[in-house]
Length: 147
Image 1 (tube, helix red, strand yellow):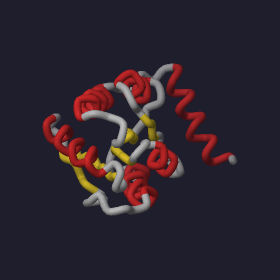
Image 2: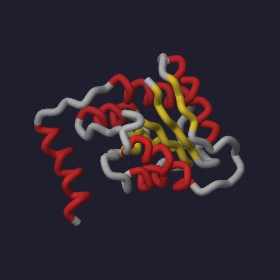
Image 3: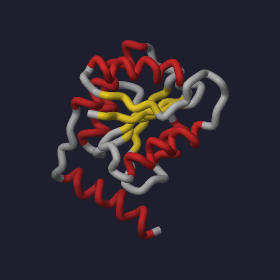
Image 4: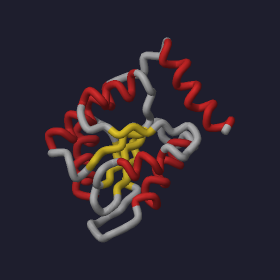
């Protein structure tokens, strides 16, 4: 699967490692930048991946910044995007199973390479459970258009 990813300067080293993880898992990372640790504005890069997922160019995406928060806030402005900040495997799993998250946001400054590998692997291997969760996800989407 092709998976777009992006980071700001703070998430850049972790993004480079996540690309390796994706390749190891048989996926094709599509790098939307940034391409160095030179200071940039995270919304510029988060919006690129969020737009692509929102437009159904890709089913899933991954964003990284220092805390993961800025990227998550940026991505969730896009219709159809359900970005989740995950800092452990349990949160990653539940974000897919219960929330049908389609963008994983990671705190690049806070996670080791082992933690990144575990979280990304868990997130990609988890599936949406549907059922009672489907109704809740539909409410997330309908709240975007009624306010």
